Image (cartoon, rainbow, N blue to C red; front, top):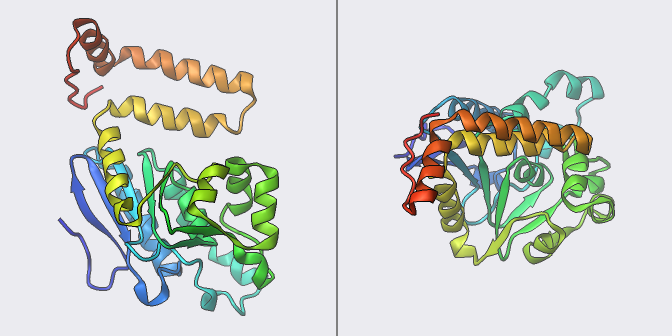
Amino acid sequence: MTDKQQSAAVYLVTLDDGVAEVRIDRPEARNALNVAVRRELADLFSSLSLRDEVRAIVLTGGEQVFVAGADVREFATASPAEMHSRHNERFWEPIAHCPKPVIAAVNGVALGGGCELAMHCDIIVAGESARFGQPEVKLGLMPGAGGTQRLVRAVGKFQAMRMLMIGGMVSAPEALRMGLVSDVVADERTLEHARAMAKEIAQWPMLAVEQIKEAVLAGADLSLESALVLERKAFQMLFDTAEQKEGAAAFIEKRRPNYHGES
């Protein structure tokens, strides 16, 4: 199944076994994020978030490039007031707040807004030739979609400062060592590997997966004591689900659990 409108740069490629594959397809601009692409991403993620049959999402830019950055032509001569009035942050919120697990499959470059987009995801699978960077400083700018905040949380202050202030690119193996990506695989296996991970996640109880994501993301901005309370309450709440009872029974009976998706 491919849900691609003729003029769409973002579309649903497939929805199979609970896994939705979303593709950015703007090859003439190396998938640069203009307003149209951001809006289409926001609309599609908003829709997928509400669909019960969607249990995991894979986000890709294809085999050659993930996202080369923002479309510079759209802001080259903009004033501060113009940039403020655009409220581009509203296009990122449906991705940042998506309750489903999101896996980025990154081939080629993920630069600027592309690196920020990947960091909005929960897991990043990179092809061995992929490169990541926040080169905004070279344009007299800085990241504006979470790059300074998500990057330092992912790799720590000193690695983040190096990437942000020099504006260079890091290879996929270096990104793995830094903690910026989850896995590095052969370029031709990037999407296949991301799909396999998504399918594995999709087979588990969805409420448990969603609670894991919520606790990790919300807890990151809390004190350890408060985050542990959040975790404990979510853990306790899951004991009221049919899938928890089935999982425990299957473990005791030494059989495979039979999950049906209900809570």
